[in-house]
Image (tube, rainbow, N blue to C red; front, side, top):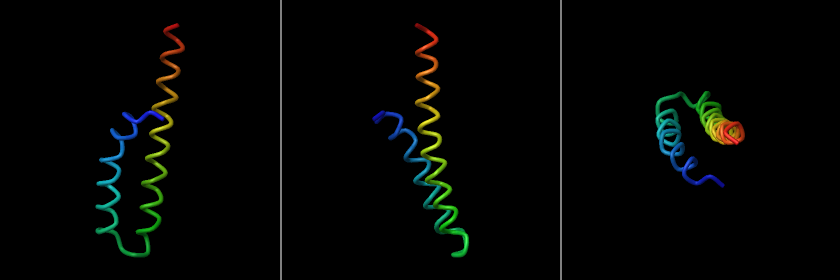
Length: 59
């Protein structure tokens, strides 16, 4: 696990999720929180993938 990437991305997405939870109406709140979690994991894995590509191209 890439802990540095995980803990770099976690605070902004956590803050975004909390803001969305308190500002959105209850009908769209669960979808927004789900989308926030999905975007977090997509960003995390894309970052790892790009880093592997860069490392592979340097070799």
